[in-house]
Image 1 (tube, rainbow, N blue to C red):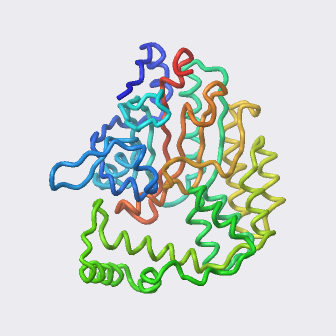
Image 2 (tube, rainbow, N blue to C red):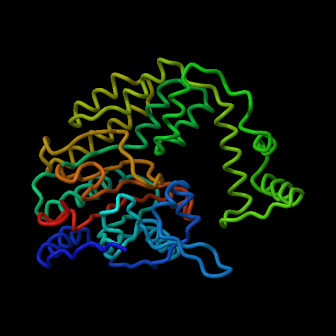
Image 3 (tube, helix red, strand yellow):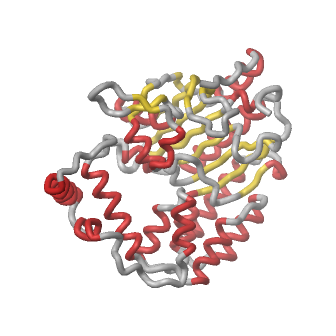
Length: 375
């Protein structure tokens, strides 16, 4: 396994110091994390990037690919309504490129709060923390890129699409391959196959009923499932596939508007203006754009020429459902962000937390932030 070089003490202390201003409690997380949970959050394609381990007869696990999910689970298990946590430690991801570290250090902050106001303020705080930590590393070629999964949902809501199609597009917003598939079939009718006979049989059933039917089909066919996924998970995926195939397609003009939205990459003020020009009329979109104006006002410490607005900005893990951001170095490029993060309110409910809970966080790669580090 290729291990990232250590960051010199003074540079690492400066990066830590920038995050320390959050006033967060230091936490750690187990190195081993449940594989199925992470695949559900990131998609099966993520498996190739994970170091998978399995004891004889046990469930599959993986070496910790990042801290966010683990810290969120610990917060929920602790029972507190709110919390501020800072962490530092190694994370592990396979690097198919062959020359990148597979074990590397992450520093990060996660903020949790009960439902209510304050999300815009927390968004700006966490993005500002990530920026200051990146600056503390000494690089002078960095830019803060800002995006918003929630803004995509509001934009889709402004296009007056059929409910099933709008729901499908919002669900695949963080998965470019699936979203591009929807755009590619613009102008077509709904597929006649319904996504397969088995999926069609399961469609419309409750999760428990669908899982029971799938187990019955397996028993009749003599099939023994492998890989650790239960019948409920598999049934839900089959049903979603059937719904996607039978949903109406976008019109050519609707697809063109979405492509234009996804292609926005401008200074923040210009980018917001483009969103307004492309969108239909919807109060939800107006509110989302007003929130962005408030975020930008709170990020005034960052020079305007060091910020870019790209609303389609996403990450490998698709649990982000609001603000997304990356601090990018010109030398390292878009594929190796110095820092990244965003809002992931929905993840807490998926992990068993309160439905109205709020969460936002950031992670910094100190070896990338260090001016004499990764190149």
